[in-house]
Image (cartoon, rainbow, N blue to C red; front, side):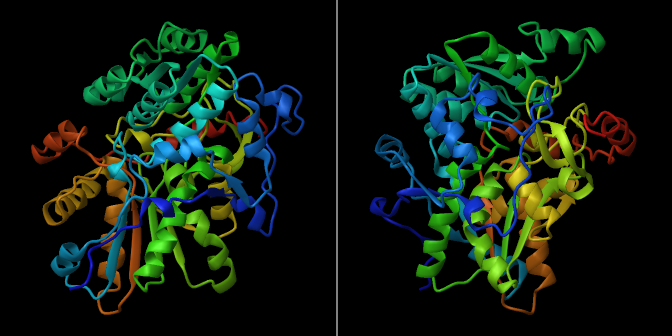
Length: 448
């Protein structure tokens, strides 16, 4: 019998995170201080990040050791299994082998916990008492809440208002681990108040929630800001996913032809594919696919330019694919993918043609997710379902050719069941690509 899950032992949890910057044959454009218009320096980041994370953000070292305390907490769920979707293969009648790296087994149900634990650890070491952050669908908010409870840190989470109401049980998770959860935009920050004065019924965006969280962190000495995606150090911590996957594929005697992951800010995608990029650069045959929603297609339809990471213009300027920092995406249920931009590292790989991107409508994504759940027994998060849809399409396209297709199953959807109810009841709809809104938002690029 062929194994349907490849499992490592705890001793095989990676001892170091992999820094892709060390292996790239080109420079990543530096961040810019929006006030001075000069390249970002360490002093620009000290108001919201501890020194160790700042060092990781700018590091060119190939390997950065994982602290023992962080690795001990990782042992609660790592290594995660690599599973083969044999039932899906049979149903599709394809020759391809489809594998998925199951990050849903973490305490919070997603990959986000990998960086949450690391960030909480370094902030605790630095003497910080509280963290603030944003969250879309709630996966990141739950992960940081869990991590803060591990290190006895306070936590306030600004949750995008549309998801605050769509996903109440993610909010419950955050409360269980001791966090305060605020619907964003809110009256708790000047950024939020400005938005509400302009649009009292605003349903929010990740960019707005980031502005609120950063504003609070800047104003309080005992508080730092923690980010769930986009920046280099966040994607660095996620590389435990790809490092384990490489080892598991080797044990299975496989070499991947396709690597697939959903993309919002880029954390699960980067963590999954970065350890394979050097191989892609050397051999060129591996295809790496980033999957987005058509309602917020930053890599597929965005502009590669310097932009703010938040709506209020409080963050540094980053060179990335962006739809414009003032763009507010439609209220799709894949709340973790409702971000106007994408990681500078992932954006650079897309700009150089090293990775590809595709975008799907909401209804076709949910249809693929329900099929996967029926066949494999795991309900994907709406974000993860984008990668599932792409894997199915690629397998069908290569139906007569044996291909090794590997996707990152970034999280489960057991707290997204209200969205599935709406899909099954015919209450969900697709959102047209908001071209006019994006054009309007791109007119406000700060260096345009």
